[in-house]
Length: 257
Image (tube, rainbow, N blue to C red):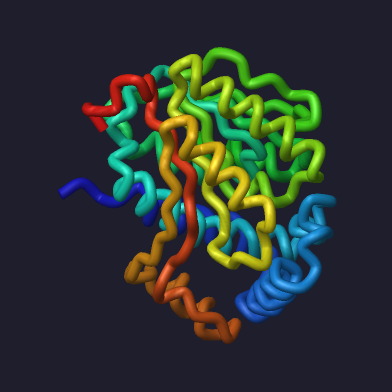
């Protein structure tokens, strides 16, 4: 059996970020970032999750790996790995985990284009793609004006909820337009209903376009280091949860998916 590339990446992440910070410093940052996600989500869209070395290390070594595992499970459950494409567009790519998790499940080796505004996140995304030996282009762009255009696959993971209402409405049009042109389109967000009042409207539009809405709960064994940080921070991610909106490629011929 081939070694899991996720574990190799996780080890490299910990070596990279624990070089300047100890376990307790990162643990405190994990707790602070967790509170930010729950209580002050408006600051996430402003870049609050990436303020300071501690929060960046907490995001990179704890939250990003959890997101990777969740995205990978969703991709597998949706059979989205069957998508055969030469390119994947990651909207609000952050550290690159969502598109990496999807691309690594594909039989093809697509080129990833990551879009983000945060300079640290873009540098981290380039590093992530490099560790996974994925071809990539990461560039700064604003989703308020970004046009998707023709692409094989689009993913927006933990991104849409952080947009303004105006930006979200525009991005809905862009993503549905991409789907009509044959792109596979996948949106992933946290499961908490209180976080995303816009979700029901998007789900209706998705279903009308031939897509599907799902809620997910996965029991995924965490690697030892991740489980240790989870326990030390007083959190519990033995079950990974999320929800997704999915339109397969060329939805007029969905029998293959």
